[in-house]
Image 1 (cartoon, rainbow, N blue to C red):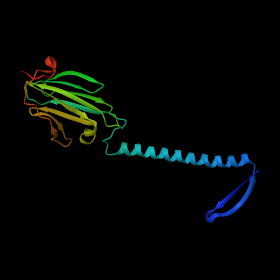
Image 2: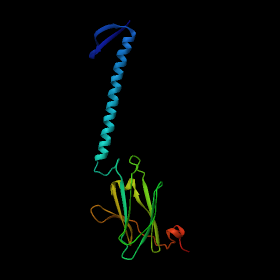
Image 3: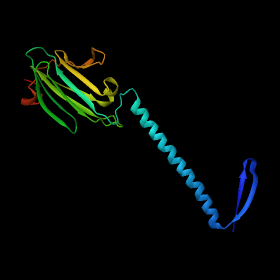
Image 4: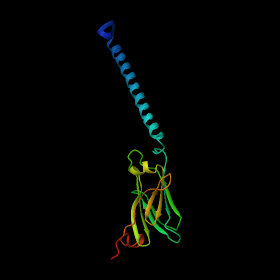
Length: 188
């Protein structure tokens, strides 16, 4: 027989009862089990609250949605631009866009790591450049789910949602060989 005592605050014994040893172990395991259940219940609530906060935070984070990127040729009538966009995993191919034509794609970002990156090589006349068309760490705040780029005579510019441009990448001054011919090597 084992003696189990109930102790209340101020270290006063309330009662003492004799139980067989297996009975005392059973009472202790029940107390432990309730604690573990409460611990997992609270952990589940915490995870649920974090997911809810992330989902509702200004609609800019998208744990379940897709991001969309669009490039539009605004170089002027009669001007076409050649673009080649890709990520580490996806090659979107080479596209020739006439004036006012667009190329767009959608994808699921790496939500928790913020590491999704798409970059594009673009060629217009004798100018070639590469730029990050979607960089998750930057664009999750700048453009949210929809990143729109205008390819202009000064370079590709990211559109603000309220009009105007957030920023632009400027065309380099060097003359180059194109995307298909020489993969961006300088002309001698």
